[in-house]
Length: 116
Image (cartoon, rainbow, N blue to C red; front, side, top):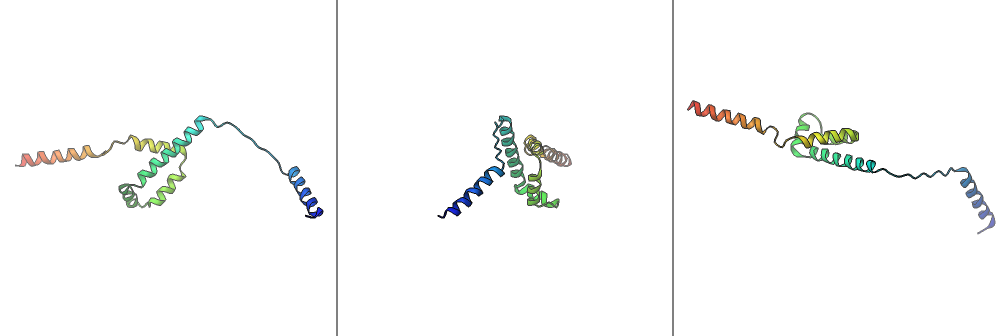
C-alpha cells in the first residue's frame, strides 16, 4: 500500500472518531416491562385466534369487514386495548346463547304437549 493512501485513511478515521458522537447507554430492563410485553403479545394472539375462527370470520364478513382488515385493526390497537378485549373474550361463557335456545326448545315442547 502506498503511504499516501494510508495517510488518507488515517485522517478519515481521525475525523470520524472526533466528529461522530459516541453515546452508548445501557440500563436495566424492569421485570414489569418484560411481563407486560409478554402479556400484550399473548393477548394479541388470543384476539387474532378468535378472528381467524371460521364462524367469527363469517360474521365479520356479514358486517362488511374482511378478516385481513380486522387483523390490521387489531395490530393498530394499543397494548391496553388488546388486553381489555382479550379479557372480555376470556370472560365470555362458552355457548353464551345456549340458555336462550334451551328456553325456546322447552317452550315449544310444552306448547306441543298442551296442544296435543
